[in-house]
Length: 90
Image 1 (cartoon, rainbow, N blue to C red):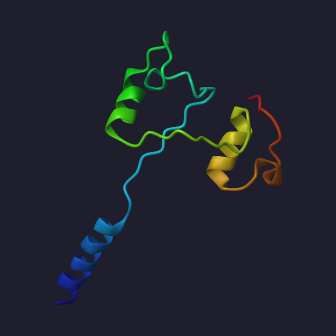
Image 2 (cartoon, rainbow, N blue to C red):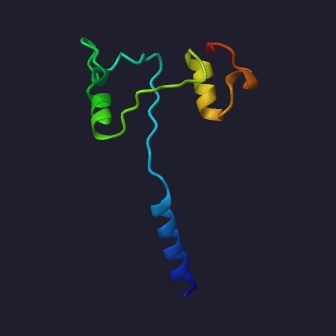
């Protein structure tokens, strides 16, 4: 009886969890995708994401360049509070 109850509880919890995919594209401007009207750059896979899923029109980032923006995304904090102020050269 206990095993059945635990299995049922896990199945119910799995159905309640949100299912989403986050795609981060570095150095990509708002107008650099075909789905937003760029006349020359071809982005068929990202265009398909936009067509089949959610298409966002307001975008926000923790910073204007890649290292602080990634830091903000991964930590949920302002990059400056973590000590990342600019691009980190490796």
